[in-house]
Length: 186
Image 1 (cartoon, rainbow, N blue to C red):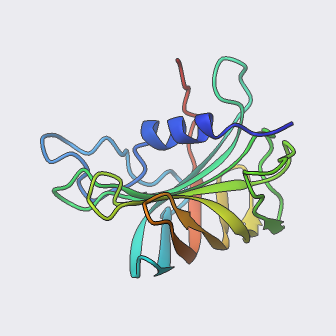
Image 2 (tube, rainbow, N blue to C red; image 1 turned 180 degrees about the vertical axis):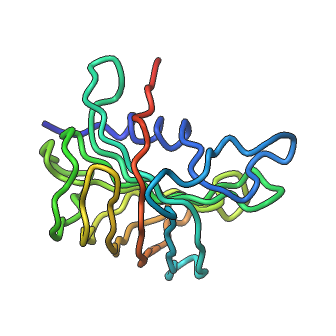
């Protein structure tokens, strides 16, 4: 079964994944780190966009048929006073938290089984010079996996959907706490 990128894009839009102020017109909707410790990530982008960032890391496993079933690892930050998020999302349609191990990133342009993990990179989504990329290669390494905590590293590469298309790579680490699944409605 091929995973659709539509649910992945909807999740990126629906997720308030980042501290740091978010909406300058109101309070940050991010409730902060979940119980069990800090939930953070750091990444270094190379290629067409070169920078390092840190932000909030969260994961969920949704099994309800009324929501978007699957595993989601969301890494993101919205700089203070701006609406331009930078996010990295890892998703698989199989609603099971990954065990400790190394998971290759599946190319979303090919057949993707439910157990495979796909990734989207979104950099400065609301600004000129933005990058939205589907990762084509890479891996997600889980070093700790429990119902409340997921830790590990990642290295993913893709092509920005800008004209002309340009390569981007994200390398980093995360320490994510669990959150309730985010329902998505049409």
